[in-house]
Image 1 (cartoon, protein in one colour):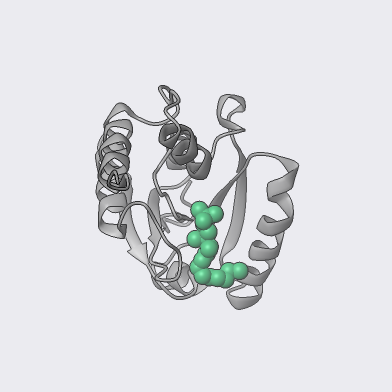
Image 2: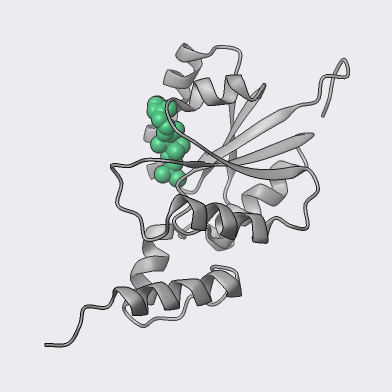
Length: 171
Ligand code: PNS
């Protein structure tokens, strides 16, 4: 929490394509660690996404409506520079399994090199979501499986609609 009356701003960056309950759990817990938490969706033209950045921002805004100190934004370019521009002291990331560690360490060290004043903080994902990823949610729903409890109902509905739109036309 704040020291010397400087509010602690934290950035929680990611692709969020789509946001899952794992992300929302981290947002909830992060909102208790910072005075202001900014959920930041990466604008990455190279990455093929199921939802546009605007759709992802909208889904996140709906999901965090109950948290007064959480806002949603998007960014491009370097995360470290974005965090610095926003006056953030912390970058928040979730770690699910050991397999996440190597990439996260690499990013955290690079971000520290770029902006030493911004600290990366890791939260361990809740056990219930430690296997969960946006990629696996998309795959399960595409193959007709049940993702109830893994994403909010409104996002499950959007996923179904999007995948129905994307289904290739019958020959
Ligand atoms: O949800 P993701 O896809 O794991 O999030 C990855 C993200 C957005 C945190 C990462 O790709 C990122 O920060 N990209 C911005 C570009 C950047 O700063 N790259 C150098 C970091 S080492």
